[in-house]
Length: 397
Ligand code: PMP
Image (tube, rainbow, N blue to C red; front, side):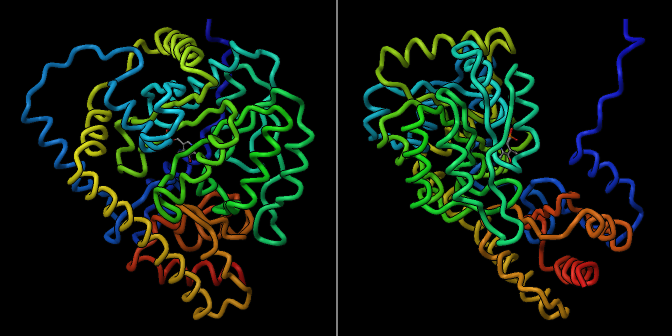
């Protein structure tokens, strides 16, 4: 049966991790994977999470099955966070939200549902995009193309080209948009440019699928989520996948959600019933613990305030690392203008380095980033930044 099965290529980023683990260099630094580490280089356990966990564990609750769409209080808390509890869409019952296995799970439920609703639709992702977007939508049966995004010469977004591609896309095309903190480039579009994107989506009859994996890592929870209001105001149907992996540092608990904004409460009820079939036939129902932790934090005012503070701490530390990196690169003698590093948002930076330079960073200095030039700024800290800056300055010289 398996004689003809071919070896699948290694996941480029997880493969990098394996290479990192095997590297005996004591000064090695892993800037490959998209994970936030604190200034000590440790994966944080947020205090709000630890407090919620203690509360839940001391209640010693039994572990029955959850409903197919997850914990109701969790789904409601997600809606409050993403759309605003007082928004007309939420109050009017027009949003169908289901608990999902991380942001990836939210995207996959949405992709499988879309395939049932409009099997002939094409999907467009940004060029470049999170490496799993293409595979995920392709495996759900879609033809996946790209819209222009990264501008290597200007170090920013090819916005006019992006807009033209959206305006010219066939009706019904599914457009995957990074709501904030674009992965991998770190370049976001401005609120005024979002207005044009929303207009283009509306007038061309496209289906927007917003991927929100880093809310709170750019400028703030409200600022990073502002695009949602623009889509709500446009009065169109759209999808939002939510991930709490980063914003709660709960990577392994797989906590996320999918929300679908519909025209009416009746439509939302029908959509929800279909989302449940997708879930039921994939993994039946979601796990209990992580979503309970997130729901507890989001709905307990003191814990919520603590979360917002801790998230702000992560955001500010990333910003500090960005400006320190620029300073240290210049101090190390780099002639090029690298101020774009502080204009980028979120965990990642397209460093501008090419494949060969990234390979030299690994082999000569033990600094691991992705061949595309992407480095995870959230893995820099005051102990490793000098070595990283000096290594980058050497390979870029
Ligand atoms: N979308 C984007 C843009 C991401 O960067 C990631 C995670 N790296 C995800 C979705 C998936 O998030 P999760 O780990 O919660 O599945």
